[in-house]
Image (cartoon, rainbow, N blue to C red; front, side):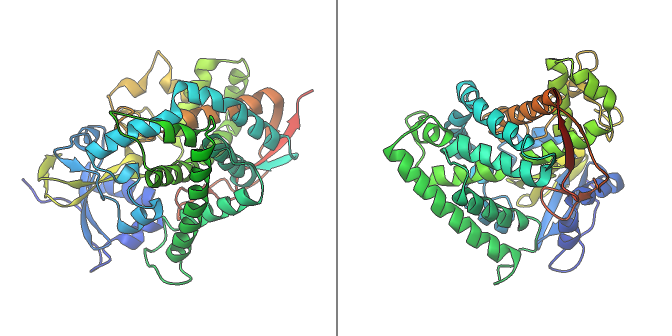
Length: 416
């Protein structure tokens, strides 16, 4: 086999600085230059990056790839230890079954009134609403209320501020020194864990119909989640849920460019609404990669990846793969219509929040996030006329997930 294409960058740091500055561009440029597999070096470790839908099959082969402790150490610290994305296959399967009890069809149905109430109140709060501020807060409030019965107020304000600190460290240099983002984030994570620990203790005494109580009560093959495991997964759910507001921002920005699509949606077309949400998830930059470690040497794209290397699956390029999607950089919900069904061109064509079955490493809250976006768009289109005032809708790629620079300001007029 030929040696892997790519480059290793500077001694010790490799290409870490370039990667952190803009993960998405890093992956897109190198896939164009080197093809569906290339090497790099991040944080002193050799890395093989795989792109294309067939790479998902590699990541689903537990004999080839392990997810256990596969993320860079500081990312694992921000997740708070052994959360679902950092568990090996067997431990992951068991815990995933237990965590999914917070996202059953019955559980999701019970969450809908809170979702509609909070989003409705937020949209009605002012003539101009910012997706990156008011609606971001609304999404976190929804998650905290649905998951642990937390009411809006000073405690939630403090929790949101701490999650902002944690998120800011995902794309910062992994240096844990006082005053630097990672140090601030780890202190914020500890405060988050204290709050979640108190919530768990209260729910053990007084169960309720929220997600936390569902996880505490869940059983699978005679096993249950310990309070420490529930705490780390609760943190994982809220942390991952912070990205949902990015989907709201992406939907608003793209629909503002497509008045024809807005008019079609006003016809109460449920299939079209589903297609729009799918395209928002495919098109909006949120999570650019998935991590793994090669258990053994394997081949992909005609190249050998050595055992022990970090392996990354490039979601950023997979979701815009031109071999699957027609004009992949365009926003086109009709690509998911029955007549086109571009997402059926490969079993792993559509992987906006991970791939594989629910019990694999696909996001546990996939359907939950879908409901939030669907309800937001339904309320916006049904109850308001709206426009985007002049603003910068370009992305700040230096943060994770990328955010629209001006926060997406929406000017609203209530119908009737």
